[in-house]
Length: 120
Image 1 (cartoon, rainbow, N blue to C red):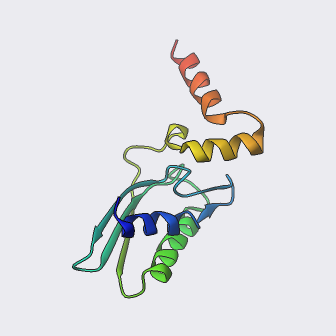
Image 2: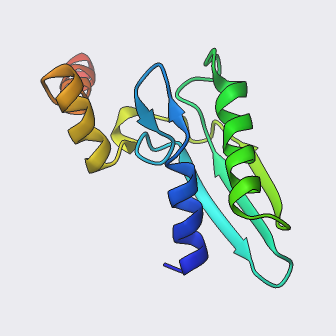
């Protein structure tokens, strides 16, 4: 991973979803990051937990603003997508551990077992 891409991820980790208590990266909302060093352009493809997320605009705005502050002089493009739809399976291991601390159990495993149970 390039140093700039790692800096982008570290910046996006500063943006937390206040409803869930995880940052954008650990929540699995970041789908893709493209860096064009020649053009000094950073493009981020991200999603939300739901198209109807009440804090969607805030999370989007905060992602753009943190990248602008961390990369002055760079063109920042953040695009929202819902394809593929987000699911708890996208949460990182670090995110899962934080959620275990908050809730006392692995919410991702619980979600997977409930979904698979409905498929039967």
